[in-house]
Image 1 (spheres, rainbow, N blue to C red):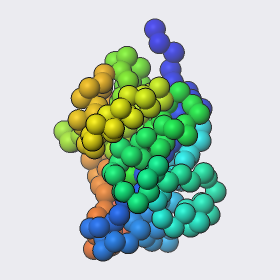
Image 2: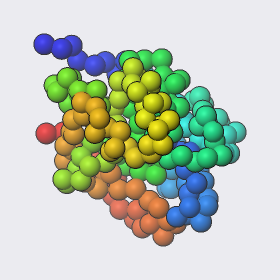
Image 3: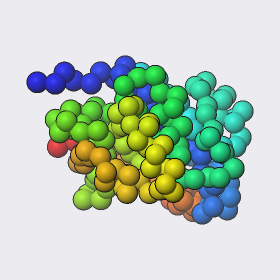
Length: 207
């Protein structure tokens, strides 16, 4: 039987490197939500679940560095090459066997995220574990083996950009979470304000 994956074996990565084009070009991770930046909510939920946390950001680096964790831009921060560029950055700076990625625009993701994905990865002897809720895959919530950096680099070098196209080439397992609302993200200021009116979920257990 495979030993459980300890939280200290996982580095968490907050993906905050996008353009924020659907939010009028504003830096999404720095938008206020219930008194704190969105990315800070992600940090506070992720820190108890993993050994260390990194942030991937391509602008306003000083603002993110004020969160107190390492901040790393993409190799080509002006390109805004999407989440997989962030995955690559995280893997390049990951000093643990596993990397857990979360987006900066989903402030209520489950507190059981790391444990659930780690259990799913182990049970399936997979290279990647991806969250799923309500039958919908959440591709930016991924637990990855850190050894996949070379594989991802080769995929990006061919022009690949889609997460599911890359993970389809790997041993990937999808892990179900009970609370669909926990994975609600925001793409506009109006969606952000609407989400503020909802109740923070306390569930999030896996099957």
